[in-house]
Image 1 (tube, rainbow, N blue to C red):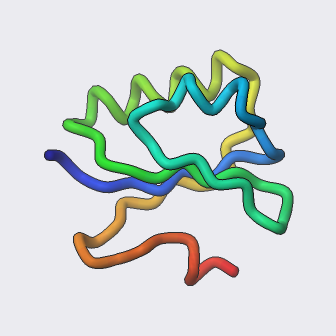
Image 2: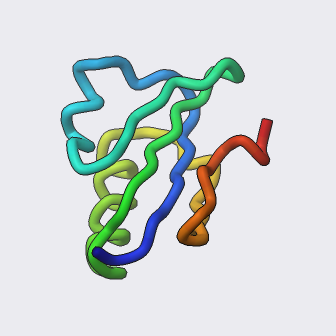
Image 3: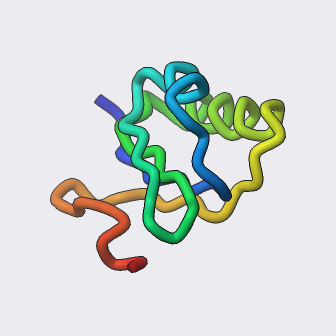
Length: 77
C-alpha cells in the first residue's frame, strides 16, 4: 500500500487537471489552495508526482507524510 501523503499546491486546479492525479483525492480548500491526498507505493512514485506538479507549472506549498490514522489538512486550517 505504501505511505500516505498530503501535498498542497497553490490555486484551485479544477476538474480538468484533477484527473491527472487519479490515484489521489483532490480537494480545493477555502484558502485558495488544492490538497492532493492518498497513498503512494514508494519514494519513486512520490518523486514522479512532484515532477508532474513541477511540469504542470503548479506552485508547491507543502508535502507531508501522514501517520496511518491522520486525516490530513485539518491541522493546517
